[in-house]
Length: 415
Image 1 (tube, one colour):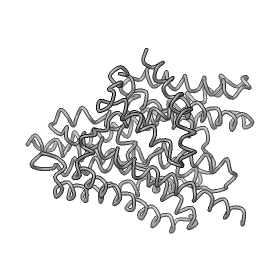
Image 2: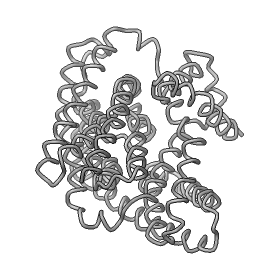
Image 3: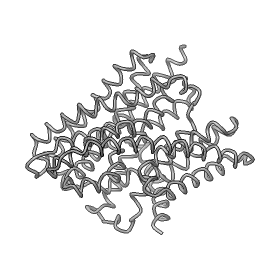
């Protein structure tokens, strides 16, 4: 029943706060987070009446990747697969490992937690998750760039990179988390278990994409005679939601790749004349019914008492700022040697700057393991780092991406 309330809340939030955002030139996601704080346990505690809000926000991310799959230029990606793969893996892993060590040092020096010792393996694992790009910011700007007629491979490659970014670092995360659990419990590290877990994860990702890819092709075939883009968009969205819920825990863990698989499968099979109108209709569905709840949910998880502690704010602000520039540096250093123009490299670096959103979704997957293994304070770190980093990085990334699109558009006209 609360799903209906969440849908209504999402629509009302967008319609009410969207104009306020334009008038104040403050990103609307900040207002959504503030609304979430008001609704959360430190505000009116309305979130207790919305038990499905975490699932709804996770589903919103899945639908975002579905939509991104619709707009992908598949032939262009096929010719730049190696570069796209490296674009996702190198910046994420590079930033995650380096920033993880820095975060451990910062948290050891600054008294954020009451624990006598901070588990380095857990901190690095969480920072690796933190390093994963934030598609909720990157993908809409990529779509906007295409809509403005800017011809750049960066849009498609960055969209795919943002998908891969959420999965390529995971085997390393598994190793680090197993190490963290072993350190906390005093038991030895089970190397065989780590290898098996990593192999199973990789196979599951590939299989999930292949199966949903063919589901997407089936959706395209089934809706071939329907000429109304909004009707097709609604049907495809509902099928994706159905797949997400039917697959249960698998959907919760691999929903992003499943949504993307359906989108790509539809993309390569649909008639060209309906592809862009259907993409536009899907963006409207996502923006109105789903996107606000991602950030409202983040707001509900913010612990105000922790935000009022100077040590928390100082520590996570330092970590966020270092991480933003680390990944930007790694991305630009790689891109300038691999065919991107200076302007495109700058755009991609700004795209990777947005932080924190993925932390909220991944916390739903690894949170139980952290708590059961005596690392529940690391779950607190995930929420606080997400809150502070979103406040710092999302406005920064949004403003910079918007300005860089203008630069790319001017460059495109000159050529």
